[in-house]
Image 1 (cartoon, rainbow, N blue to C red):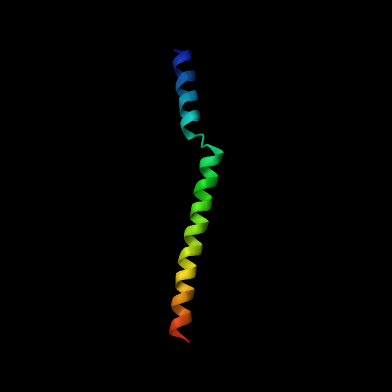
Image 2: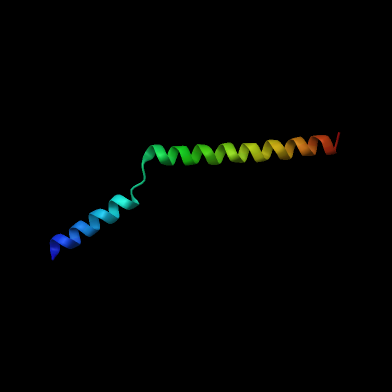
Length: 50
């Protein structure tokens, strides 16, 4: 009985554990997406107020 609980706890911990590379890729993708949106907005504002 205890063994099954320990196995379940280990499985939950492994599922919640995120790979560091995958996390870094997601953060970089978010930063680049924000930069892309900001660049598009800056270009639009530049041409509107020129």
